[in-house]
Image (tube, rainbow over the protein chains, first blue to last red):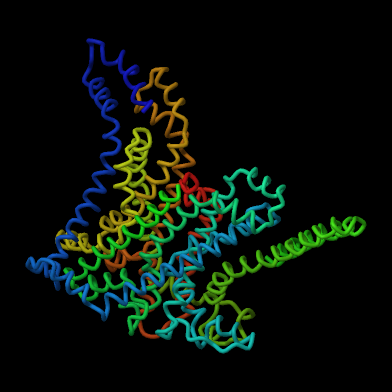
Length: 317
Length: 304
């Protein structure tokens, strides 16, 4: 806003002069329109590669496009949506798995993340080392992480069962059983992304002022009371940012699921979330019409979840 | 690592010892506090060691397995003590053409990050200075859209243009991840930058664009580094886009690793070597640029 007003004062001497050369005119024009000039390339990129494809997905969801990408397709209205919404074999179980995975992973990550952030909050010896270590899972390539856990969790040769055996506990099937695969992957997600929550919450904790906490301490509040009634309410905005960022990514989890269980989320579709289902429909079965309908529904679910979280937040304020 | 936990432990016991010594001489009401603090200190040390082990051990295990023969991997008694071999790396790097994939990953990440910075920084500047919140929202939309919903139309268009399998398509698709990230980070960076500097420069005769390129940009190097490093990492790690859009010669590392498994029985040693090859460069970058990565990941998180 302020930049706009300085704009006119600056333009005065350059614009008024009668000996305005071509370059000068061009430069003036660029300076006057820099708001849109600067934003234009990025906006054009977004328009061409994101808005247009989304619109096309919406169109595809109303057609029976399938098979080859060059094949003819017919407009069939809402038929795909009807087919998807009545599909209790693949679609609804996938919705259930998506929510199980997201809510489970998110809840554990937030609680664990808060605990670890509180633990790292006050300075201690070796702080730097611990901070580097928690950064490592975060930057590791998800596909490599998936492969790494495949070896560790292998029922026969994996370290996880060797460790359980060492404590006299029975070995678990982990990824190889349809019952435990999704929960196991949920914990792999917790391993990889809890550090993200820790970093965000730590940034929030560090920016808090000490005074409210001190005041509560002087008034004789216990550590738990100080956390629950002072620190946590002050941290709420940061917590919500963390929930939003992690929640969106967890809903869209693809890499570790596909890398460990492959097409269709395993032979019993045991880890098939909406993202995996939509991907399979598109590129394994080439059923573009139905896939697009699933994607539009998936997108609506994500937007609805985001709206819920931000709406709650405004309500709290 | 052991050395560090030991020093940590010594430090705590030393501190506790002195605290307890003075506490013993004082009245009972005063004594309770040091004991509780001491218990908390021990709990904290144990918890920190557990955290470090949980996050580090799997990665160490991957590294160890990549240095074992497949016979040793199946032998539980050789979990930690074994004779290391470079055989797996020889196989992966030599026979399986991994240098091509490393180059592909690097090239795609490098170019997509560079192009995204070129178009993203001015856009972020404009959106920050002119408060174009609605336009910013459109760009940030890209962060919530499921990638698959874009892949279908992209695949439609690019396969009709016979571009699937080329670097251009891969770079464009990775820019979809990089651009919103860069705009998001740079916007919060420009938001926190005082306007006065630019105003002063304009009073001294620079044009607004001149003030941006000569004053604001040089002062934003830290922000640009943050955005660039993170965007490079996200592109390097990206799997889904390359899975669909890359060809036999433009495969990136994550896809190459994924394909490693599809053939016959799993060669665990080779697989772990391949997984190590893809993670090590990123971890080294992370070690040296930790500060930037953390500030980028948490950009805008504390403003509420």
